[in-house]
Length: 369
Image (cartoon, rainbow, N blue to C red; front, side, top):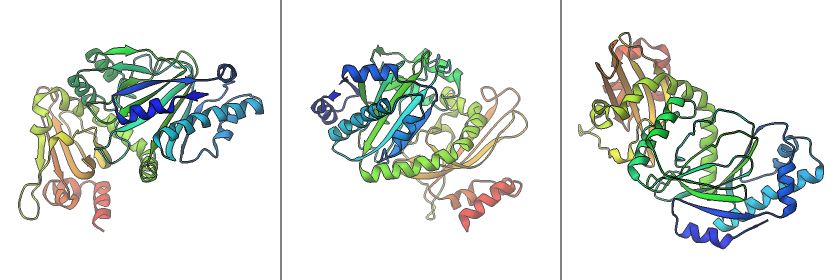
């Protein structure tokens, strides 16, 4: 296998939204990839090491020891070439063995979010599909269309209606790639991020992504990823519970962030400041401490949580309520924001809400302990 490392370095010095590179596999490597037996499916994720990668490959299917070693060496060579181009030895690597499914028949167009905390640094990731359908690339030129994408990208993994909504309103040139192409693309940055989607899974798929970074960046990302995976089930349940009121934040002027935002006063009785350019609620939700799903004309939607703001965090209390006609007819939303959770507890969250919710009371007591 050969990859033009200098071509990758040139791209990294002059980052555009994405760059497609050729991966020159040998005929023997291409034959192996094509015939490699897949009987089991799953994901392999690792940070700064591939010591257990060969064991994962052994469990993919019934393959000879020679073919297992050769498959391992293909991935190892890809990784070494990318790391050499980035001039680093730190990385996150993900190998996904995916089965046929109709789950992505409706594309999930999205931009990857930021992986590292420093948002002033353009962040890039390498991906390639060794076998099967390749990633869908949409070259979107207009920034307002990426605004549409970001405003509606919340929970699109499970929300098929939102996928259809995005596909209807976003446009761009569809870029064809092959199994002998690799792509490096920008993540996070709204002006340059690459719009892409999983393809139709009409065949089994072998997909690889490599995220290079500094040792500090990868260690921090690894720790946050572990916390996020533990928090995934809770957040998934939360997003489903709040998908209805959140829908109106992007689609109804009355509920735009600037119209529902209430900043708390600091200890000097001055209103805390915020730049809405860096406050992309609700997609910036980092953690949810407590929530209660609402019902039209019966009870409000409420939650207390933490959101990203620039390279720091703020705490929020959100409340929304509508009569039986719904938010588009008669309703209200308020989003209280502060850098101090104690300030929210004392001045935003009603005392009867805390008093009548034992779970919320216990959680807040932990923070005050």
